[in-house]
Length: 274
Image 1 (tube, rainbow, N blue to C red):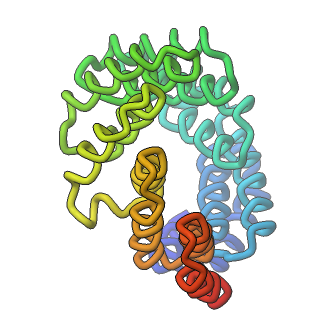
Image 2 (cartoon, rainbow, N blue to C red):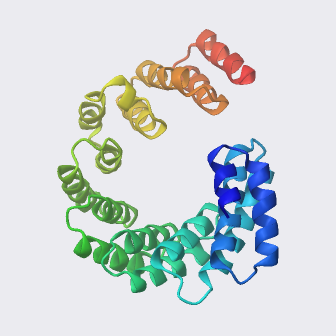
Image 3 (tube, helix red, strand yellow):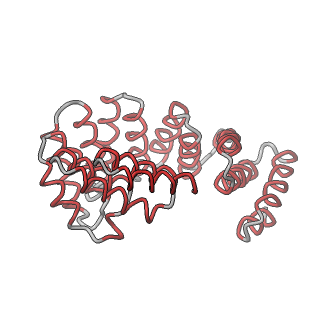
């Protein structure tokens, strides 16, 4: 086990995985061995650029964590990790029972019902999601995240006014957390209050503002206000720092909408080079 930990710490992932796989083979009933195998698989999944290999490792890690969590006396932390690993592998249905089991084991930790609520929301189970997020809010009333989750549900249920009120409550609890502005912007967009979105998001510094989610909201607001050039400039600014083909293509599409074929073709060339 020390050899696996040492190999992971020094980024010798293949060595870590080989040792962890052998350890899990000779000690199949050890939760620690299975968890280490899961960690090594996740490390390799994060390191590879091949999406198929990454997904295969995430699925294998999910199985390893599930075996670890099935051992008697599994703690809340391990149960939560098993849920996160299942979610990362794209299996929300398997993740939720782990989060709920972690909550039962450690009811004073708001993270467990929060994670359960967010996963339930993604599965479209709104009533159960609201119940879980409500429990998380009761456990930690100073956390903005259960409230932000409830805001997202209100938006999906067609109540942007309630969504905006909740989003603003969440941001009041953590005014320097930029991601919370996105929840507020989404509610404002549904209400057609596009200038307020720009006031909200353009107040951020460049480093904070240049994220995909915030750029999307800024560009959408500019488009709604019939300013496609400003929308294209927003995508171009993000694409310059993001360095991905996807963001360059978004910039190209935005410049197409702004009727500037020269800029659009330039960004398509950038996308092909990335």
